[in-house]
Length: 254
Figure 1 (cartoon, rainbow, N blue to C red):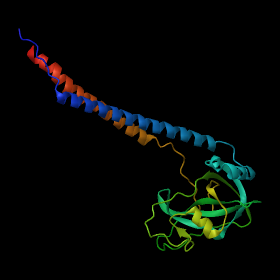
Figure 2: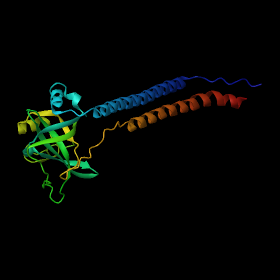
Figure 3: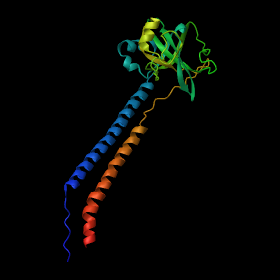
């Protein structure tokens, strides 16, 4: 009768074991971190949706929050009355809507009966690719106007090559709009937020603004990859370090 073969647990076995346990712990932790990020994004998205469903703020309520809690304004719907400062209209270049390149038209609005002034992203217009310096015709009503909108951060910045920025005020066509620089340029007391106008499209201005999304798909995808890698490490460890080392030799000796 053949005696069972003793399997020697050498230094290499323990080294591989420690490395495998560390790799499994790291990949599992990264997977859990991605799930936590997804949960945070979903909670933030839920808060944004809740704010967007609140009744629209009238002018005076908007001014109070603007003065004391501007952060609470983000994503709230508003109804504003005031006067367009058409001479300070700028056209933000390389902005997309419906898969096309064009301008986002931004005009300051002087709030009725107040010194407060806010940037309004009025809509999107296509650009003239035959003459890149040509401005599209945009009608800006004079006198008192009323608009519906949604409070947002200042216009998003796009990548801008160093040295490509033209002098402030030299052109109404700009890649980006720096709020502090625009305050200094115009002398206007601009608020730290802007408004996305949501009225029915008119005057050639499109207002199909991106909808708020949780954006958790990538996080769940990354979590699946990390947990999959963790499982693969476990399977390979069990096969090469346990099955082939302990089970197969005993099977062969029997």
